[in-house]
Length: 253
Image (cartoon, rainbow, N blue to C red):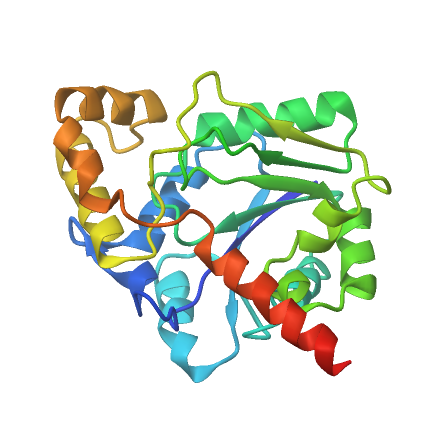
């Protein structure tokens, strides 16, 4: 059984409430759920939010739209993921994040199939994908190993950091895109990111609500000025911040 867990919260420091911001009259998170639900490889999708009162609105959105929701620790996202799995007992876990409203179900499925064919412990999209098409898949055994051995702040917040750092212990590979597109930013962390994504939806959604990566690339070829809306930000800024917090943590141990 393959369980997809989509983590989401409203207390983002750079763009608060971003996952419920409206795009064409629908919450951004709901758009991502609908795109992901088209996957043929995922057996169940669950939204994993925090048990903080600030995330009550996410639970309400899920209940209103018949979406499974789990609530757990706000800051220890690794524990939130692990506790979420206990009700479903999956063999494999797909990790998705709620700042990726352009998620592509075909990429998700192709990567899951590659991971299964190679009998890996962990696979993730490589850095040559546009930032915002991020997908990770891992065995339940690898997730449990991380849960019981991870200690650093970055490992608890970013879920798979422990697995990635133990690459001699786990069978790990990265799923490559057929083009070098790491310069493109399709994640939503800043107001400018949201502005770009909103324009992409306005251009493509009416034609095909499940528009794919190549549709976006074709749009950006026709309107290259769109990429300049949010091209000044650093990729994986949140992770880099957590790694700096690790250094403070280790000094105090």
